[in-house]
Image (cartoon, rainbow over all chains, first blue to last red):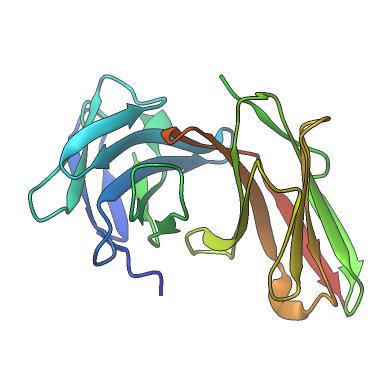
Length: 113
Length: 112
């Protein structure tokens, strides 16, 4: 168990809908990262937050947004969902904001039908 | 930007043999390198990391080698066991920003 908790584990929703994925980082970790894993693209970095502030952005679509709350948990919001958004979404956390040892959660499997 | 390439999508080894998984990266400014193991249905699990000021680092049964000249890193697993069966990813980072760039992964298969 990495100590990073993601909910829900599975999510099935229809095209055009909006969903929210939740992540609780390990105790003491200030950085949260979101990644998308699909068969064709592999693991892709989406966005990073550090202590409530956006720190770095990767290949995140405009339809997607994230935030980190004062208690350091984070949410990834996906809207106007398309079939191609079906993927595993991982959250990872680390102590610092640099690229240090990051621990991954078990992921949320999103299926858009 | 950064791209991370993979030499073999699948590697099959005999139980007890050593395994070597390779990875190549493109950006010479990258300074942090990490190997993850992902078992089916689970998130990536940290194995070992190395910074650009080192060329070798050892853990328990694992060694990571970094060759900055040719922008190549490898993961060596000694005395491979059935529990080592998984997909192994290398990931590359730079200067504390931009998240990690992952390779596509090598599926390590252990033959009895």
